[in-house]
Length: 155
Image (tube, rainbow, N blue to C red; front, side, top):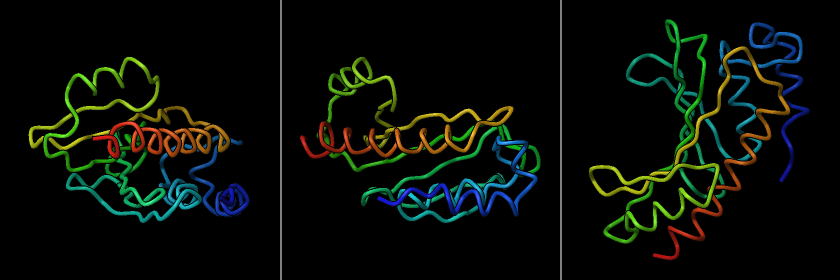
């Protein structure tokens, strides 16, 4: 899979509010969307509160990135990445708990409709390097693949 760093660095040079030195934070979510596109499809949307939201796919799995700690729809402090699967009684709480004890990344849960949820938090407060954010997204891609193999397809 092509690495998106070259395109991101070029875009980051144009989006100076999102870059402080070599750090990226969330005032300009378009920079983060460009990085996310290196892992699949990604489009910038707005949630019901007016905060940025990224919707897309990684290796065929639908994903979202919800921005938190925002002020007036900008200057966000964190991103919650998540994927949701229908789970008609397939994965039990026992299996979910085993996953959560085994893996440091990707918290698993069941919602009130018995949907299977995998999420993680990326802290952006104070800024992170492009390399760090790219690594966080690469871990997210890896965890989705592991979770799909061990939990979703194994039910």
